[in-house]
Image (cartoon, rainbow, N blue to C red; front, side, top):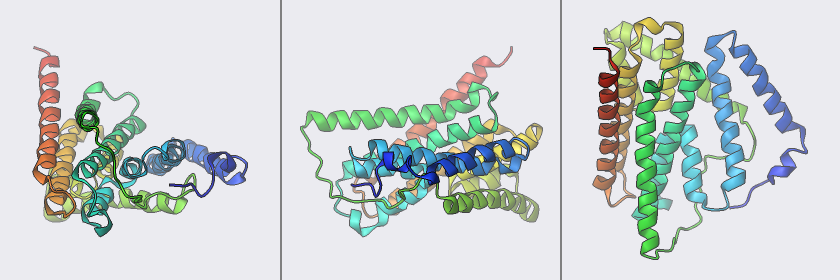
Length: 287
């Protein structure tokens, strides 16, 4: 994979400095208008993906793009890898590794969202994401080690997931995703008011589509009204919705032979996350 423009060339042009300057301004504005926190959050993730792409992309294009694509939309990565015909010949091990990296990126983004909306949030709220992240990282390296022990050589064709553009911040994408997240806030309110569903049920339903967007919407609501939101319960529901939707995509997809292996890994990570976090809460509760 070749970059359209080398990284060093970007710093010789004004566009990268304008992008980062505008991002800094948005952070300042967002400190006064909470709703706008979503915009610099999305822009920061795009900037992170841009630098990561330039620094690490030469090592393994497909897996790296799976990881960086997970920051933008892990659901999109799953759809492309599992359903696109150009990935049909991809070995199961490479499909699994790429999907694991997309999940890791999504979980890292969730951690960033929690920190972004509340730097004083107790560790217990991060724990479900850290546990799942640790589980997937362990599986990734165990599988990589197993492949090395068999002297397996990657025979990946040069494929791109086509989620990355060679520009620091694509403001058009930032606007689209920001509007999408704000729309989710409105939809969650609409579902609750129109159909009489609880916040928990509406959160679970919408988390089937994009977990990190629902978490961002929830954290915005929580930052405005923390007393009326059981945040840890909502986090569990978001992770459940993500597990169910990703497992369904794997089950229905055509490009992964070992479907049930991946589905079992998904539910095992969820169980570990929920059980260990619940035990932590129980042990930490005053007697």
